[in-house]
Image (cartoon, helix red, strand yellow):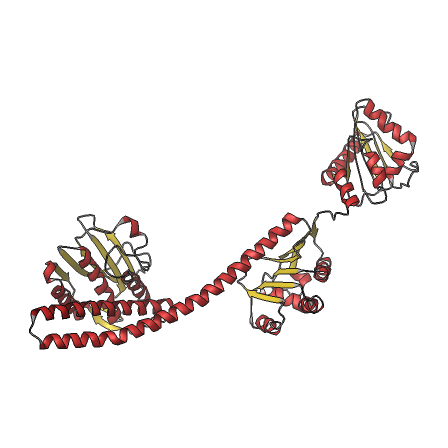
Length: 519
């Protein structure tokens, strides 16, 4: 101490604070260093037994820190090094190691600096001891046996709540084999107020286990897809263990688990609890949406069937009555009735188609057919219904082009495209059907030859605001219809291994809708 000019760094075990405080030569040596302008840094293990000495020691050094498990003592200055392995309370040093070799001093300084960075402020540790505060720690666990024992210990000390995430189904089974699941049931029997929530991937065995525990009102399971390679345990929102999965194929926890961390740091624990809460709530909402979606589809299906049942008789009777009467005004009223009944019929059919598409029950009856079998009659029907608007429909159809598909459904697609074009066109609607080896704008196309059907109009074109969502449900800027036709058409075409797309015409007004099918 007499040779120190600039600094002395020193650490010693929990017995040493009494030596510095009670032995005058040591205490005066510290004071003399600081009076000469030297700096002293020190750390030790602060305990309930030596906390009084440490409070005095704080005033003898420039900075005092706490570190668990310090053994022996080392002092290093700018020119000398000394170490001892045996310290007794209030007793001078007996045997020491001394050196003024540069390399030894540098090594001692390196060791001190490394430990110093991990030590905590003495004032914080003293406060924890005097106020009974449990210190916050984040502890690494590499030993699987220690980890399993820690898990069981935490399960047994829980008083209010357990939050558990199993990374995989095998992770659940491994804990089941160790008896941890049985411990959970025992806990709820002995602590009826404790709540246990478990998130886990499922298999048949896990579902059986969950059913067996279903009568226990304090244990709640939710099933999820594997979302990570870590399992998480949160106890009373005060403690957490996070274990990384090393090899999920292993039978035992010791073989399967790699690195793990234990923490009682409140921010860390609450973060994991928040992650659990978010996943738990998302799964709950997803389950509710599934139930709601199923009920909605069942209702729509029933409603559409019930709508369709009385519509056809209305159409048939109105046609029959119209054929029997001569009064022009009454015939116009019947036309209005018939036209709106057909719109209602089309709407109910679209709703049924959407329900089938979304429940994956849309069936196709495929056969070989040519477009000459369906296009001319379809166009005549539309031409007759648009006479008052003077819209001309022209078409070009190869005689020998044969397609394998559901003729009724493909006719429905073409009819939807023609109907849309007529709505927005006041001049000409053209239809072309050609075989092409390479189809532009069709991402799903294979290298095989395909037929491309194009319906072109000279109307206002596609509004840029709805272009991106053109083939989704309820997308329309027309006063007629619900915007289901293009959605249904795209799904029908995709079910035929084709694609449907649209573009505004670059060489004139209007838009062109195209779809492709394998030849």
